[in-house]
Amino acid sequence: MPRAKDYNEAWNLLFEQLDILEKIHSEGTFLITAKTINEVYEARLMAKFDTIESLPAIFRKNNLNINALKNGEYVIFFDENWGSFSRLSDRGGMEPIAFTAGAITRLDTLTYSPKMSESAALDFAHHCGLLAHHFKERELVLTTRGRFYSHPFELHLGGANTPLQVKGVQVEVDAGMEGTEQFILIEAKSSTRKTFNIRQLYYPLQHFRSVTDKTIRTVLICFSNGVYHFTEFQFSSRYFEYRIVDECSYEIKLPPEPGAQLGLDMTTASVLRDKVPVPQANDLNKVLDTLAFLSVQAANKHDIAAHFEFDERQGDYYANAVCFLQLARKEGTLFTPTPLGHQLIGITDRQLRNEQLAKAILATPFFGDLMTTFQQQGNDLREEQVMERLKEEGLSGNTLTRRATSVRAWIKWLRSNGYFNTGLFS
Image 1 (cartoon, helix red, strand yellow):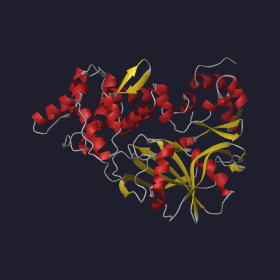
Image 2 (cartoon, rainbow, N blue to C red; image 1 turned 45 degrees about the vertical axis):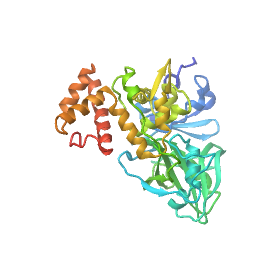
Image 3 (cartoon, rainbow, N blue to C red; image 1 turned 120 degrees about the vertical axis):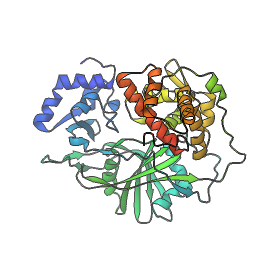
Image 4 (cartoon, one colour; image 1 turned 180 degrees about the vertical axis):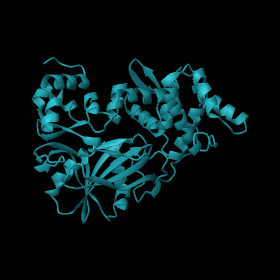
C-alpha cells in the first residue's frame, strides 16, 4: 500500500483498499491494527481525535469514530449524531467566579499567567486551593498523572452490539486528585473547545473503577485567557449514555504585583502595520490563547491546529487574527509574537489584559474607522456601514459573509469591555 502525505489521504487509502465503509454498514464495526495503519501513515497520528473538528474528512462525512481496544488494535464504529462527542457550552460571555487565592499566592517557580501550560495551570489551581474549594475537600492529594495501561473493561457502543473487550490500552490522565471520600479525574485543555471526545475521561474512569471504591468524579478543565472553565460529566455503563452535571468558571485573584502594569503603546503598531486581511476568527479569548501558545514557541498553522484540536484552516485563521492585531508576524511558515505581543500576553490581570486587547483592536485601521463613524454619528453604527467597510477591504460573496460574522463577534466582545455601547449586532 502506498505511503500517504497526511492522515486524511492515509484514511482514504485504507477505506478504499479494505472496504471499511461497506463492512461497517454490514457488520456494525471494523477492527484494524496499528500494523496495518502504519503501512500508509504513522498509527499514533491516525487514531486519536479529541474533537469532531479534528476528525479525518472521511470520518466526518460518514459519522464515524475510532477507539482503541488493546495495544495496537482499534475499532472504527458508526457514531450516530456524534454521540461520543459532547457539545460544550460557549463560555466567552460568562463572567467567571472570582476566587481569592489561599496562603500560597506567590511562587517563584510557578507564575500565574495566561501562558501557563495545561499541567502548570492545574498545579497552580491545586496549590492555591481552587480545586479543593470547588470539589469541597479540605485536602486533595495528587496521586496520579501521565500515561499507563488500562485494566480490562467492557465497551458498550449501544444498540444490540455485543460489548467489546478493552484491555491494556494506553490512557493518559492529566491529574488524579484523591480526597477523603472522592477521587477526581481531570482532563485539562489549553483554551476552550466546541466539542470533546468523552473517551478522554471514560477510559480512565473504567480503569479506576477497579482500583478505588471512592466516588469518582470526571471533570474537563479548560484554561483560556487566564480563566478556568469546569465541565463535570456523569457516565453510565453504556458509552453514549452520559450527561453534563455541572458547569462553572473561575478567575483566580492575586494581590497586585509590585509596580503598576502600564498600558501598552499602540502607536508603533498603528504606524508600522503589516497588511493583514480582516480576520475570520470569532473567539477573541482563543486569539489570546493562540498568542500565548506562540509566545512559548514559534509555530506554523499545522502546529496551532494540532495544539487546539481543530482543522488547519482554523489554525491559519487564528494565527492571522493575531497578526492582524500586530501582536505576531509571519516569517516563512512560522508565526512569532511581536514585542507588543509579548508585552500584552505578559499581563497577568485579565481585566487589564482585555483592555489592552481592545486598544489593539481599535488601533487597526478597520476597527478604528468603525469607531470614528460610531462616534461621529452620536454613538450609532449601522450594520450596512460595517458591510460597506468590509467591501472596501476587497471582500465579497461568502468571504464577506464569513468575515462579517467575525466582525460581529469582535464588536460584541468590545461592547462587553465598554466600547461600542449600541444595540448593533445584539
